[in-house]
Amino acid sequence: MDFKNYIRDIHDFPEKGVTFKDITPLLKDSKALQAAAEAMLNMIGDVKVDKVVGMESRGFFFAPILAAKLNAGFVPVRKAGKLPSDKISRTYALEYGKDTLEIHEDSIYPGENVIIHDDVLATGGTAKATCQLVEALGGKVLQCNFLLELMNLNGAAKLDGYSVKSLVSY
Image 1: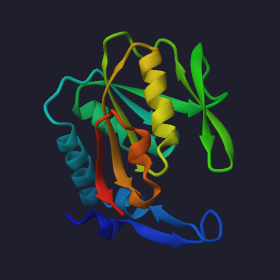
Image 2: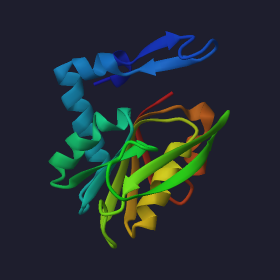
Image 3: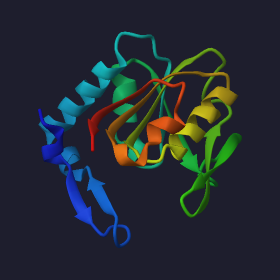
């Protein structure tokens, strides 16, 4: 299946000069959704996975699906102030400023095998901060797994040392 047929470009969103990759056509098509989930599952391979971590908010679409298929737990990583229990945080640089991600302290145990999932790999800042959160809790990042990657932003370079897999590249 050519997944690019289910991803549309929205020009000048969220600001002028940016072309947003909209995955909602893929999400609303049951066959494309199932095929994408299976293809991302195949990218993971036959390894023991304890947790799948999904980043707010579009990482929440596929991460729970992958977790269920892997017989693993799902762990959300959220923006600051949205998790109710004890948490740790990482602040990372954006193109214009900073952002902070948080994870519950009890969500990952030392030695657990973890897949990091998000919908898009762009600059890599969110994924790198998430890897640092997982490792701070003692988890082992097996793979950073993405639906699509924007190659011109070179986000994979920020994830040097991690296995990075993307279903679709632009």
